[in-house]
Amino acid sequence: MKAKLAIAPIAWSNDDLPELGGETTLQTCLQDSRAAGFLGVETGGKFPKTAPELRAELAAYGLQLASGWYSGTVLDAPDDLAAEFDKVAPQLALFRELGAACIAYGETAGTIQNIRNAPLSGRRRLSEDQIKVYGRRLTRFAEHCADGGVPIAFHHHMATAIETEQDLDLLMKHTGEAVGLLYDAGHMSFAGGDVLRVIEKHGSRIIHAHMKDVRAEVIGALERTKQSFLDAVLLGAFTVPGDGALDFTAVAQRLADVGYEGWFVVEAEQDPAKAPPAEFAKIGYRTMKDALKKAGYSIESES
Image 1 (cartoon, rainbow, N blue to C red):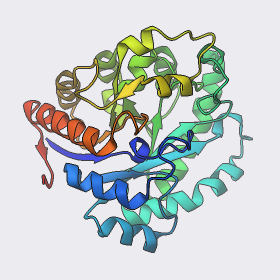
Image 2: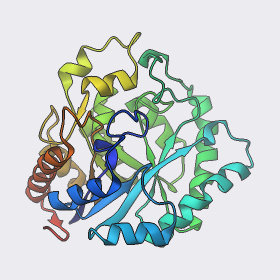
Image 3: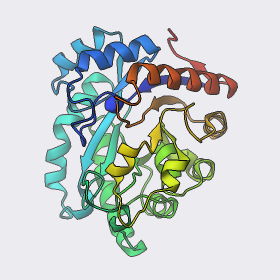
């Protein structure tokens, strides 16, 4: 079993909350990431958008491109998906040229994940019939991206239309195999799901994995009819593996059991003033390195 460790830049700079790390340079993020031991990174708002620039920036720090977020709106798109195909084209081309494993597809039609005054309880909800229609459309979009050289990994996410374990179950039921799954332990735990059961049910669809931990006491104290997802982030709902409530040795073992190989991405949107990114990157790396080795993985290019 082979694993590669990457980290997301959101610990250094948060695109939805620019006050968190807005002054931090991309170069600081990349230097800290490599110093912590990571082989790869995901993209963020400060990353170059052209292949020559991005390749040079990553190469300067000996890093690979693992993946990166894509704000999709297939849920509300016309059936021909023409505008969606046009919208994804630049990122699809960039990721294909840089050898990214996948596009991390987040459904942002109607999302409240980036709205500070929108309470968690007000997120968009879909019936199974609506998910059936969405699933057919999303499968076509995924097939288009796969034909273009990069598969999509669907990111279930708090404050979006596909948030809970039940939402995810229905989406997997009503989409084709072209729709891969981005498994995110932190978001599933926040949504009240069983992080191990999700792997058991949908392991064959998992093509990318985010290793995000949670502070259970923060999540448990939230007033979801009043507080937003961004409020939860600012309060410290998320952290890196090894600093929260989840058992990543068990998560890694369950992923090994279903045959997952590929990127394990440490991710935790936090206030960098309270959780220094370089320090927390090292905590996350050490925790995941230990968990993966216990699960029988060999880790590519350890530093």
